[in-house]
Length: 254
Ligand code: NI
Image (cartoon, rainbow, N blue to C red; front, side):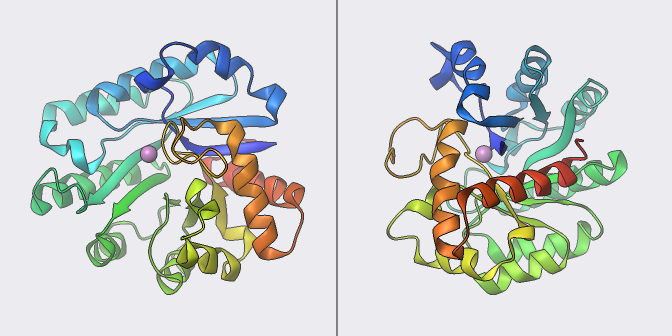
């Protein structure tokens, strides 16, 4: 079944139909969802929400855009959430020089501290990196050796993807791969072994074709799987089965 490694179901875009939508997922071929926090507030929300849905797990971490709200005390509060059931990863964390909401120094500081938290807790990491390829790689080499995780919504070169794979990380592929202008990502997918790819929505954002621009949800991953299957000349079922296996290995879910 479909394994969505990265979703944001606490987003207000789901306020009107969240429960109904989530309860319909199994019927649409979705087996597992990892609900990922971005802001400090959402850490608590995602950790709460997964207790209501047996097929859902949580990742707790603070996105680079939101690092301005962090201090030692908030890190301690975050850390407490990992004692709860089904909180299985640290994320999403990283660097974002596209929005550039916070200084690069501050983003780097909290990226490193959250990587250290993942090491301390022995949990996988979900990495967000936008227009910050070199700095992200530098920090990953210095502080993420031996960790497991996903480079989420991967947008850099195929060479760099191979380097991350060599370091033991998975490449997260979502709706963008279905876009006509996503030549670079399509090439990356063609060259990477299926054993290194996991599927994701980043919903409510980044809906695949034919829903580009609309609200995304985990069931739409079938369009992502279909495009990966086309690029690799294999069946959609094979893509869904293998990426599900990869994701379960990554998160340690049996
Ligand atoms: Ni995300």
